[in-house]
Length: 505
Image 1 (cartoon, rainbow, N blue to C red):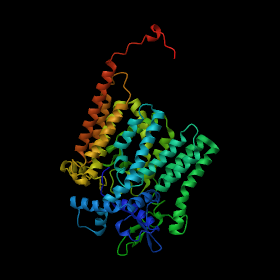
Image 2 (cartoon, rainbow, N blue to C red; image 1 turned 60 degrees about the horizontal axis):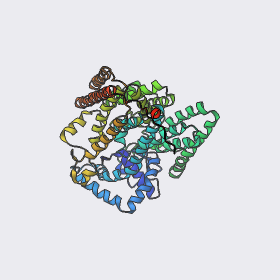
Image 3 (cartoon, helix red, strand yellow; image 1 turned 180 degrees about the horizontal axis):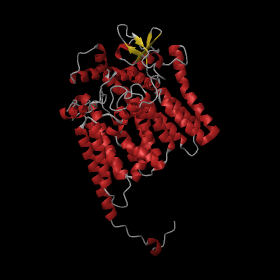
Image 4 (cartoon, rainbow, N blue to C red; image 1 turned 30 degrees about the vertical axis):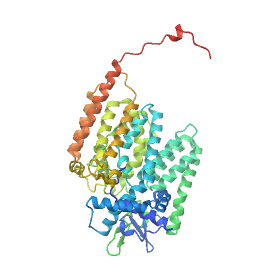
């Protein structure tokens, strides 16, 4: 896991963790370290849902008790010096100093949920496309926004794990509806907007199970009770949310203007077609950077998986209606991360139906997400060409090896490359062999079409070139593998049963 630079989003979560550890919800002592804050009744609060901080709190307390937080802080100071990070505002300095601590906390509250999410996706995908679940999970973990967000203290990945876990429980032969609802409620506790996806699953549960869906609703309510308790404790009302008093302009007081999310429903209005276009086709759009998502949607439609399609549609429409669609400095539209596990189920179907085409798009996606994760995932603008510039300069993120002294060049990033490489090898080894050599013209044409689209709408021609080469290599490898498999002589049928008596035990 890369020791990513921190930012105001992660600092807000970290401030709430420290506040809870001190027995309060108020982040007054740390509010200057973040822009993501609310001001109410004379005190500052994190604007974030409390679930991620609550999940992180036991790990923070345990590591602090044994001195690991202090050692991580020292390591963060060393990383800042080694990377030339000095000067700037007090906020910038505080954020830089948090780097290793944020990494340590993420091992528990981000990396473990990410691993659980991939296991869940593999299990569910195997249900609809046996033999392709592992490859679909690897495509999700290495070729979508899950990869960079599995390395940062954002709420998206753990919320996605809980939401998809709710779906996985609903799919069981005898679904534990109450537990499925509980997982959904906890997902909304971790990230507020995921409540919309949970509601979509609730509608599906109602259609499928009728009155028994009340058990699902009861589980959701129980999962949300901690949020009501938090609101009552922090603000004096179960209905008062941290989103109600977001600081829009700090000014001289630190809270000159309140109400950043006041427009619409917490900043969400009617979906904007131009925002929807950007979410797909801006330089950081899903189809430009992670075309495997298109294969996943194709697979969902092909298999008529209406519930995952509904979740994807709800997530996309919500995001297109938000006043800040991309969510700040990001490697892509981060609010769509919770829908990606549902898309990955479609990737498994697409791999079964159109193996070479899906592998080509997945290869291009892996290249883009690796570049983003290894360089600057929290890109403040749409100039994704900066990733290739940083790669060319060897100016990469730290990993644990880098913190230990390997620096932040290509040597330091080797653990990340090795981890992703091992996952790709695993996926390749688990793919079923084709019965006949597939025609390669169509997947190569689709890859060329994506490259043209990415060049027209993107901002990283070198990255597009690398993704295209990776896609071509994968298509050629799959074609040769299928050809060899088709030409291999079938084993002669055994006649032992007809010529040799079977011994009795």
